[in-house]
Amino acid sequence: MTARRVPIFSTIVVLAAVATMIGLGVWQLGRKAEKETLIAQYQAAVSNDEPVTFPVAGAEIDAVLYRRSAINCLFTVGDWRSISGRSLTGRSGFVHIIGCGTTTATTETDEIAYVQAGWSADKMPPNWDGGEVSGRITPNREGAVRLVADPPVGGLAANAAPDPADLPNNHLAYAGQWFFFALTALVIYVLALRRRRR
Image (tube, rainbow, N blue to C red; front, top):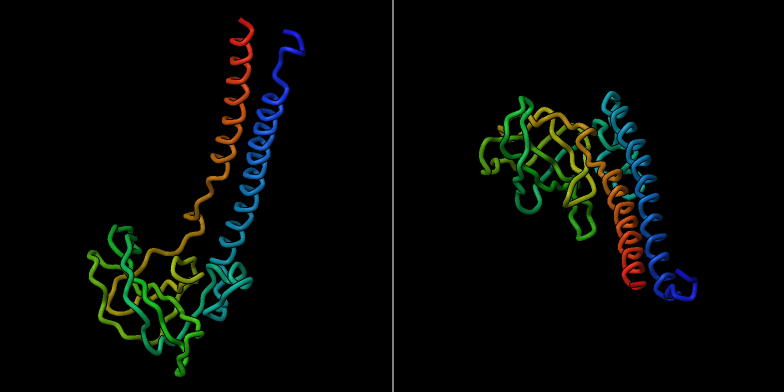
């Protein structure tokens, strides 16, 4: 195959795409290392029983995840969210999450503290309007974090103990996918060039 028979523009586009996919794969490998470091930090936090302030937001979150804390839930905010979860004994069922007001004056800018009150076998939320709650701080969907009650409140059973190992770390698989895509693109392009020669 002579150099002039190779389509220059198409080759540049394919090589740029392959380089981009390889770059994304390398980036995912870096994210994997970062996530492993973060999980190790969280695992160390589980063994630290010194309480921290809750609620928290912004840059403070990573420093307090999986640490112990406590709040006085003066009143509940919004509706209960009941999601699938496990009890302390490993049973499948539902955990129940609610927002809490922690100050007597309420404004639109007040920060809501989310609490995972406990576990039950059915989706029916508890009849609980607030009170003292202690537990561990974990990631949450509605707000940045939530307090997983330990002991549980509202007559619920104990939550499964928060475990940093449950955090997803799929970056190695993502990196493999990007490298595979890059290799596939190269193979397809080489086959296309060979077919073009015929």
